[in-house]
Length: 140
Ligand SMILES: Cc1cc2nc3c(=O)[nH]c(=O)nc-3n(C[C@H](O)[C@H](O)[C@H](O)COP(=O)(O)OP(=O)(O)OC[C@H]3O[C@@H](n4cnc5c(N)ncnc54)[C@H](O)[C@@H]3O)c2cc1C
Image (tube, rainbow, N blue to C red):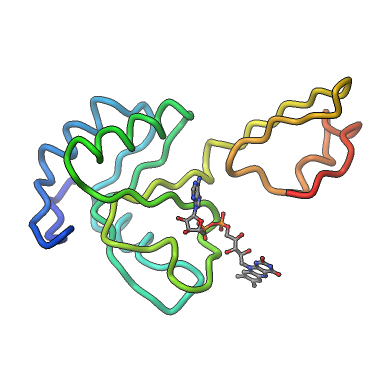
């Protein structure tokens, strides 16, 4: 069930209904306004706790772009999050938190030019597995 967050961003109440409608229309990934998700994303590896306005789990780079555009249009802050391992509260805030870790793990190897295209959330050790066995070790 969706509940309107009572968060205050930039000193004003969040118009959760219009923000939620805009995000759901623009994003193909997950848009979560429920209290459980907001609580789950209220901390990182630090001692800080800030309850986000909502959580977006983008399925694609287009979703990331759409989320930033919707937040910009509505005047709300956006915060990108990977593993949430930051130690000083960098990935928790009263903001629209984007969790890039779930879907943005695409890896593309261009062995001839010794290049790789790596999406935001790819963990280092994945490069050495399966079809990427021939990949050289990269410092990420
Ligand atoms: C036990 C432990 C040991 C550590 N050891 C080291 C170490 O030896 N050396 C070291 O350098 N660090 C170390 N760290 C810090 C940690 O590795 C970094 O905080 C980590 O790289 C953050 O990556 P993340 O994907 O988890 O980002 P998050 O914690 O999710 O976010 C960190 C910051 O990056 C921003 N961010 C996240 N995703 C994006 C994005 N897509 N676009 C733009 N900004 C984004 C966030 O907004 C936030 O400001 C350690 C952390 C832990 C918990």
